[in-house]
Length: 131
Image (cartoon, rainbow, N blue to C red; front, top):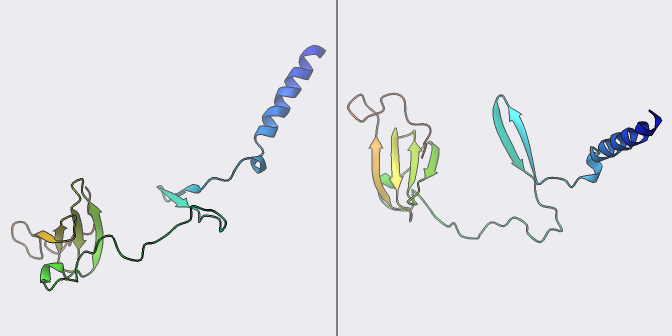
């Protein structure tokens, strides 16, 4: 019986030591739950890291407002998504429309609108866009 005690105590010690968080490297993200929704937060890079975050001086794409065309005027945007072909669909609650822009930001189509007729959203303006 005495010969089994040492291996069991040794194994227990190794397992306990491996649970020590101070020897583990810190992850670059934290996963937490918020009322049933999984939230992943990325940590800011350390100041001495070579691969820091960088935001370009010019936007890679501009949608809406820059062109003298009412279809480019956006008001109360609630969501947007990029489709597989590069097109962007914007939920514009201000106009009650889903607006479609091509990959270069040019307006291609508007779907819906305010009203009770066919293809209109009524009083429930679009608030989310799913690809």
